[in-house]
Structures are given as structure tokens and as C-alpha cells.
Image 1 (cartoon, rainbow, N blue to C red):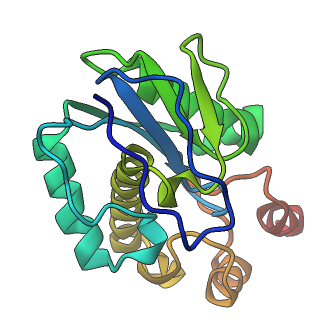
Image 2: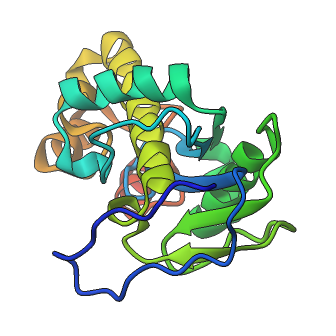
Amino acid sequence: MASKPLDNSSLDYPPLEIAYAGERLAGVDEVGRGPLVGSVVAAAVILDPKRPIDGLTDSKKLTARKREALDRLIREQALAFVVAEASAAEVDQLNIYHATHLAMRRAIDGLMPGAEYLLVDGNRMPGHSLPGQAVVKGDARHPAIAAASIIAKVARDAQMMALDIRYPEYGFARHKGYPTKQHLEALAVHGPLAEHRRSFAPVQRQLALL
């Protein structure tokens, strides 16, 4: 039987009803729509109902240390998981909305065993052939989506830490690529990197000055 929805009594949403009762339900979520740099990262996770994981919730509500501990548990105990991405170049080519859904489809397609039903965080399905439903605030409402949000967040943060080692003057370890004051100031001083998303307005403005 699929994982039960999380207790959402603190949220202003009705109880989550899922039209599927099997074991191959995949939670799907993404991280990285808002940053100015790097890939958008998606994850798909099929949890093992025989090996429940305590503490799963929206990755943004967890400390980095707790996310990393849960990331290890998810990778050890899930029936299947995949982390996939769409590159900055694909974001520029497709736009962030379509690139996000491309990353999600790649994650879903990589699952082994494959999923039979999808629970996707947000209000839109990613255009996959599998049946499923979009769930607003799903990462706080279902453990499989929460698990996907956690491993996607840990994976993308690791990419930003690696980029920070290469380009410490941009501060990626702190802002993770989001358009903070520090990031915008670094863009103005040092200019865009190859990893920056050229279709995003702050990057476009700096490119126009070159």
C-alpha cells in the first residue's frame, strides 16, 4: 500500500485524496526555479511502505544537516529514486517552466522499478504519460513528495557548493544562486559566468553592458 499522506491539519487544504492504492507511487518535486545560475533539479521517489522514514517534510523547513541525514535514509530505504536536471542552457532554450517539467520527466523515466502513479508538487503535471495528480504544497502533505524535495535540494545545493569552490567571489555557498544583493553585486563586478541563465533579467542586463 502506498505511503499515507502527511498530517496537514496546520495547512489550509482539504485532506489529500489519492486515486491509487498500490506500492509504486512516485513523489516528484523540483528545486531551482528561482536562481540565476545552474540547472533546475528534479527528483522522483518511490518510498518503501515496509521501511517508513520519520521526519519527512518540505525540505525548506529542515536544516541542512537534517536534510543531508534524510537524504542518506531516502537513498538507502526507498524502493527507487532518481535525481535529474535540465541545464542552464536548456532553461534558456525552453524557459524555466518547460525546463522544470523536462527535468521532472527525466527523473520519472529513470525510476527502476518504474512508477505507476505520480504525485507532483505544485499545480501542474509535467506532461508525462503516467496517471497522477498535482498537489499544491505537496512537499508538506505527502512523504513521497517530501522525499523528492529533500534529495533534489541536497543535490542542487551540492552543485552550488562545487561552483563556490571554483568561483568563491560570487558567494554561491551562501545564496545558492538566488538573486540576493550579494549575488547581484558580484554579477555587476565580475560579470556572468557560463553557468548563468542568460534568459533571466538580471543576467541579461549585465550581458547588455559587456
